Length: 83
Image 1 (cartoon, one colour):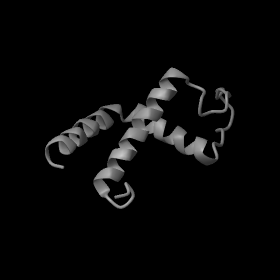
Image 2 (image 1 turned 135 degrees about the vertical axis):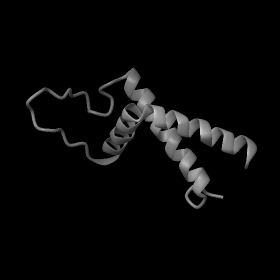
Image 3 (image 1 turned 45 degrees about the vertical axis):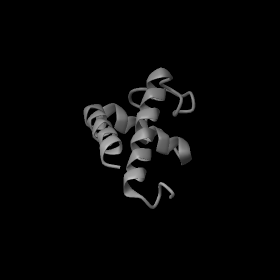
C-alpha cells in the first residue's frame, strides 16, 4: 500500500524527511539557500519550490529537535511492536 493512504506510513515518511533535511542542513548550512547567506538588515529571502519545502522541513527539525527525536522513538516502537 502507498504511504499516502496509510497514516502511519505517511507520518513515518514525514519524520524521515524532517530528520534528513535537518541533518543535511547541519552538514551544509547553505544547501537550501542557493548558496546565499542571509545578512542582517536585508529582507527575508524567498525560497520557492522544492527547495523552500526542504528548507522549512530542516527548520522544523532544528527548532523542534527534542520533539522530533521523541516522535521518531515513538514511531520506531510502534513499527517494531504494534505493526
